[in-house]
Picture 1 (tube, each protein chain N blue to C red):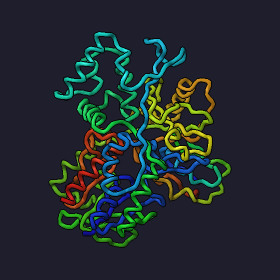
Picture 2: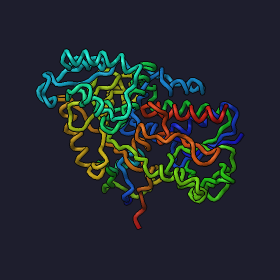
Picture 3: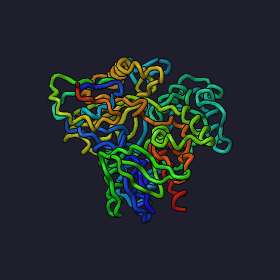
Picture 4: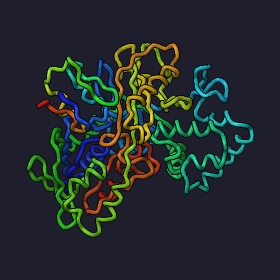
Length: 53
Length: 425
């Protein structure tokens, strides 16, 4: 997953990630544990999560 | 009467519940897969964290939100906090907590002043209830009355915790309305089940009255017909309504009906939208085996770099954490110029927590920041532009349209009550 500049760091995505693959400190960062399942995408309130092209 | 609510945050669901109870046919459209906006629970490592608010209701079971919930018939148990305390250095004049501290109760704040200033505060407590100060910021007003640095620190921590603003950014009128509300309604409370306890109760009322809530459905346009709200477009489908209530704040609402806002009489409204500034803040969620705060109210922390205050909601509802654990959350104001430096703001917050809780063991669960499009408040407290829009039948509710003197969700409830008064009268 790719996090764009809309991210405010609210951490909502981290709570829905089944792999514990999102770290948050001012903004979200996806770790190597990400399996690109995309579950987090719709939960982002500011449309900051994108599927990498 | 058909009412469509855009956004299932607290303001949207309060409106939907009240109107469905009054017999309106109500439909709510929410873009996210979950309801509650910045006022619901997020499950994380067995803890019930929150999507925004601190699982706390500023005026507890006696305030505007609690009253509106009762009027709606939403079954929420709100536990009144036993106290609000303030952590101060052991010795007056010390800049921080590193050489020891003590906790005093909120009402004891004058005890740190000189005898003369204590008398002055006692007199002001009486005189300001009749003659409310006005025309300056809170900070400027305090400095003109009592020149003591402690009072400014105290005011900053209170404004930071309650409004995510500094005392120099809040109009003194707004604070005196809040003080009046503290007399009227009392202090904080914790809803059992956290924020989601409130959201669940509202949804129950909506469903009981035949209302519908659609999640994962984004409104792409607000339809205006002849200056009047007519309906919305969702996924290319038109839904007609007599009344539209937007929970998105004034700016996002205006963007959904931008074409209709091109009339000459809309210029002033559009200009006002440019002045709206959201407030920013950081929440640090801590897990601990032993209590860190030790009571179910707020602990204000004026002698830190950044943290304004902390609460420990598991003191009121232990189920918000796994058995034997505590959930403690800190809030810190973020100045507009520091929104771009969130990482260093967070570092200062983390350093503050070590000084507030020296020698205590805790784990940082999650750090959450709020600004711009997903802020603490869409309109900084005291600058809310009301609930009306240039179109009849289109209202805005939520933290972008709070009522006067209403802290956070109390302001949301006051705004919703205002709109309900207009619609149901």
